[in-house]
Length: 339
Image 1 (tube, rainbow, N blue to C red):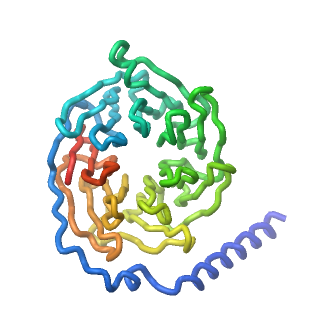
Image 2 (cartoon, helix red, strand yellow):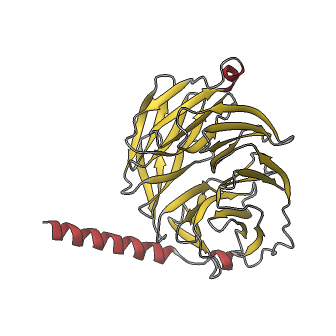
């Protein structure tokens, strides 16, 4: 019985591969052949944010494109003003083993989580009178919290080492939907621009597209050869990028249901920790274990700049909502703001 099911599964996978190949009538490079190459990309470091005393694992911009939150294993969440480099808040955490942080779209809340298996939410206004005051602790996951992203002040998505993602009702402190389907730790998630779907990347080397309205996996994307550490939606919401320990970034098109480009180079042998797009989507930023952040031309598939300033692994990055700045965070305990 098991052998028959295995054979049927292999036949279905072969049919899917064949169907995808039949629909692959061109390549991204051919489709973009008439598009001019980028004449020059010259991002410069404008700010260095120092204040953490441990490895920085995560950062996330606020919706105002001025403030950002960073999480470090020194046991602090720091809210920064990127314009002035000033620290607005330094929130002490109950667990220093933090892996992710997020800013709510309204700017009223920040969240974090890690090896404590929970998502902790802080109301920023309350920190003025009671620094470290917790607004809510969301407890359900049985593995570490690898990523979290607010939908709004009332809902948040989490990804976990227990191989699931969860959509939460923050007020009730209960999961609304649990998304199961990965067979490896889920490392990253990215919410679509319309906030109806999200994509997850996991240690099973696959990325999955989920619909938050019915809780179901709509598409599974394969191609990577090792763990996927980061995923990020393309600005249009019709594609997404992924970064993996296999030293590649890949672009997946949702409508084509397949990978449409592999951003790699023989000289790059370190893993990809984080990915992000410029506001137009023309540039793909990728942070690597080799201390660099490489900038790729999304359409041409060529590297156009290497941002080499950090002194340790680039663990996280993010582009501000207005598209005017890129921030990179590193195990060297600093954040750098580029434009």
